[in-house]
Length: 343
Ligand code: AMP
Ligand code: MG
Image (cartoon, rainbow, N blue to C red; front, side, top):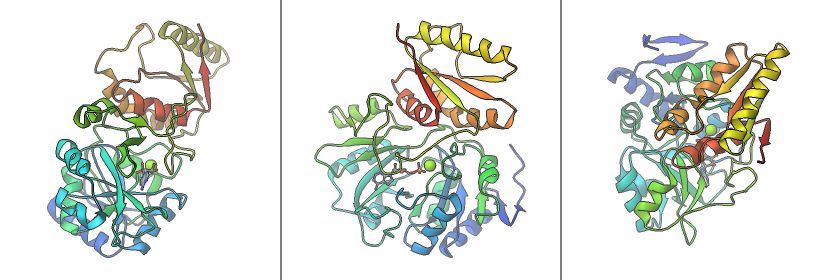
């Protein structure tokens, strides 16, 4: 990964994360430009959250529908009052426990934030990322930074700077080059504007961790039992899709593993190269702790299989504990077909 020499690709400036480069990136943001940067979840595509014309450029570069809101990134809890208002105590309790980290809080939007960030809603999602390059950039720019994932709308999110270049070179002003994202799935989005906190999108912070700190059980908002998909603006869109088909096999571990082996053999006989995501087929259970690694490699694997001549992906259901909830949410959205084994 390590060639961080400053250069241009199709007009997009590739910058290192050294201090002069961060200063350059911050001045691009202050002048209404777009900068992609690493976070602990996925690479983000940033613009000043206070500047509507800059925010508009994010939607254009990604081809993102205008009704899919963006998350505002801060470098300190004290900046919260500049982007949100009527902030409940719970927000400060959660920020104390989990910021910087993969938790976005949905709060009442302050007037200074461009309404385009919230896609017309009165609320705004806010978080503080746990990556020094991101925090340094936001601090240097002295701005709240609106940033969705730095991919073309619909495709898997980027977990390396090369993924960002593949999708957005020539469409954005700059990319900060650094190491891959450790968590690999987007932040958990928690709504604090309703009478009870609700998860709008499962993500890099587990439901169990949130429940422990809040001392209550938390609902998945609008969860559909068929697909495990919670409803949130933007979540209705086609998302995370590789270009090749993805078949997701669900059901009890022995049943689904048997079908996966049979499907792999079936396609193999017909000359099709099937990629198996992402488990040891000889094992009937996943080891504790494996799910974090599965999450961190999920989007990387989808993009890898797309680019290495595979014809399709055969994916296996994961347990839903911890980050498994987020992994299954993404797999269900990436799937062209979900095959449920009843046994
Ligand atoms: P991305 O950063 O590309 O993962 O997109 C951000 C996602 O956060 C959106 O697709 C929504 O699901 C969620 N989100 C952002 N702002 C809000 C909001 N104000 N209310 C509810 N969900 C939001
Ligand atoms: Mg996204």
